[in-house]
Amino acid sequence: MPLWYTQTIPFLVQNCSAIPDTLLESELFGYTKGAFTGASRDKIGLFEAANGGIVFLDEIGDMPVNVQAGLLRVLQKNEIKPLGETHTRIIDVRIIAATNKNIKQMIAENNFRQDLFYRLSVLPVHLPPLRDRREDIPLLIRHFLEKESLNAGLLEKKISPDAMQILVSYAWPGNIRELENLIRYLMVTTADESIEPFNIPIHVKHPEAGMEPFGSPAAFPVQGAGDTVENLSSMTWPQLEKEYVTALLKKNNWNITWASKASGINRSTFASRMRKLKIKREQRAFD
Image (tube, rainbow, N blue to C red; front, side, top):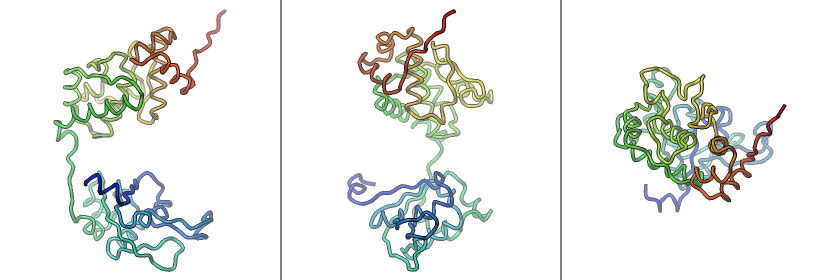
């Protein structure tokens, strides 16, 4: 899709698994004042807000069956009916949908409407799992390293050929989301400028061992810091950054100048990040 195209028309996104089933219908179709308890004003839905443009429905396999009926009406008649409204409204939207579930199996189990499936399958595109397109992995790794270094304001880390080979050989059951999360983990826990094989978690290096990601319930140590890193999949970027900055400070005996040099940024920027992250040296009690 050309960039200019999405810049001149609405392009709205809704992850169908990221919102409770009871709220998804009102989020997509809108509601009128008094439609339910707490509806103190009219609210237009995603489809009406994207009128004349595109709606991307991610994880559509998680959409409740009752909401699927409303989506089918949008596709068949180009109309919506907000909650509490007595009349329908005409809209003009294009719909892109994505899922990682087996929709045909869901149809057989009566969890997804067959008529909706065929309405959506005008131009199906199958994206193979990451393990089936390993040539993309080095490009994605470099992309995520650049992206996360910019987010953190740090120098971009390099990755050694041996470490790259390990990541290319891994099966990536969680696909790109798992790869992106691992790169964040490595950005936090790798103290040196280059990511080496010893920095990579054991469950990636030795998947045959059947270990949980990041050694759950045990945790993997931060390289040279002496502390442990919890499972990072639920952590935000500021939390990850705080772990990294704290680990550098402890490694360098809370010397900000040394820690900033180790991170590759100047001292004033490092100190500013400490203040923003509210990192202070722990007070020790002496007998």
